Image (cartoon, rainbow, N blue to C red; front, side, top):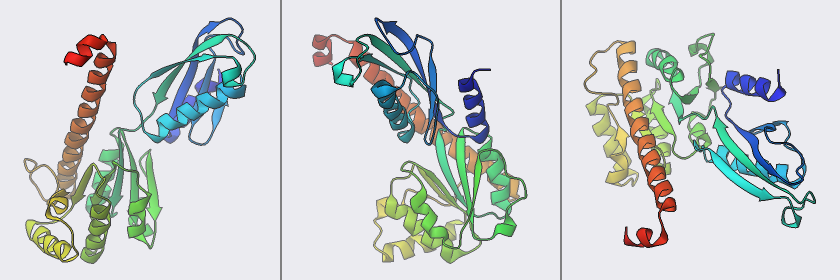
Length: 280
């Protein structure tokens, strides 16, 4: 089995995203033939497309795609001359294909009954989940694949570890901790979704305390509390978990659907003649 295939399989098993780089066209003298592949993850590279500045540039592009969580394939043409620091003199076209990119980065604060019901549901979706609690004994012995367990006494500090556009779900055992987490998340105000477990009474109390801390009303309104789909009734942990998971699914479907539509419009615009673009 080719090493790049083994690398893809291992990265997929670990839930680690990567980019598959393939030479799809070669003209003139090139360091490797068409069909040569390389796998690039955030930390490592597997196989090679010939080394040198071409490979260095390809790795940089792949890691830029990983950092931005791009879902789109990408074609890049390179002339292997002095401008790229190569002396082959030929040209090559590279295909960049994101592999195993999660559609959502989710932080779940709290490993209580609802958390233990919710996290396996989220793990079965195209998501990466960081499950955070100060109480290690609350976590199950076996975690679902793709779930990272974080045991920390400084739970609030974990908010800063999530990338922009993340999903935050707060359901800890302590109302004051819920409030501090809420303040840290709303202060960032760069999340795709924030859900807080609790009743409407809890929401009213939190809104009052957040206003006292100077949070604007429009920022506080982004908080989902009670969270979950109102159509899904029930008070059992699994019923609550299904309701929350449904709301998360609805949110990321809407978010990624909008991104895909904008990307499609941009692609069409690039194909239009300049005169038609000017009129549109």
